[in-house]
Image (cartoon, rainbow, N blue to C red; front, side, top):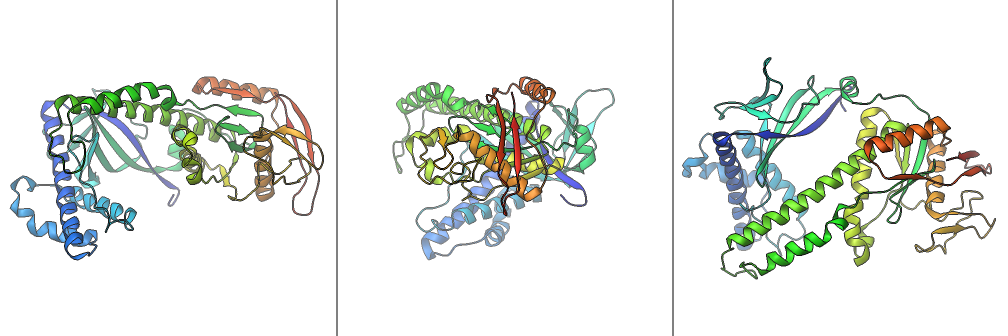
Length: 442
């Protein structure tokens, strides 16, 4: 956010005709060729001398040889620059394995191919006699129809990424607009509220909140796992190279089933993103302050039972969405310290039970004998952690507020339930932790 301005992107589907598709495919092919040309140079230099080139070296090498290829004439300069920026990111990510493993090329059969244009090279047009907006850039004979409605008509378009995903075309347009204009473009009213919650994330119960609201996650990968396994088995039976160096060409059926599998993965991704967007919007809309835990999933992902489940749950993606949406709406989002014992600490007396196992779903305090749901106890501790930092907020909900939350959950089609009534958990006053009184009703 700069000078009360924010930068947002909207992904829209575009509907090009046959001639427009040909031009877009040509630009995608140019971007792919430039990428593979630079990667080939990079891999050759590493193999011969062991030197790791940067994007500037690769760009200079490309510019000296560009005139040798007639089809590259008239290519957008920003398209070329963005290709080398992407290569630099790829080098930075794989910097420790480059001498053992070469960088990969882009394949023509890959599901996602794209190119980048800046503000000077495209424009969004609106005609008074037509309902849809249109996308125009220099090489197009006519503007491309945008199927989706533009969310930010008052925003200034800065850049666009045009992407082909199998047989469909999309445009990701980045806008610069004022925060007030963004809030006015929302379909719901943003109200100031002192309601605050702590959020505990888990595999059994996706979200447990300190106000008593539990939210379940739609798990598309688990639901479509049989379909994915069927397509994988079918794909392996088709004619294709079985190992590196095998010159067997891919059969048409192999390419056909690989596209089917890619479309299934895209469907799973879209369902997951839709669910995460609904949950994050619901939480940021209704609560003025949110506290989440900082999870380290690298060790958990190594476990076979949790590896695929972690893809469906997408804890880090949910945290990211809550953070940037909360920032746009002026909400307070706090991430607790990674080593904060939210699950092991008793919410009533503060005793820490270091013997608590991950299989224990009920927290039983050894000191005061208090029993409470493990996830609910962690959510309450996170609320207390946030209250000690901010000094404001309450998780107590009235009957009208509970009904409003239920109505919003039904509106966004979020699977939810409320905890049984927990009356007046009184946390004793200490020097480091002020007294907090929680009243959870359902």
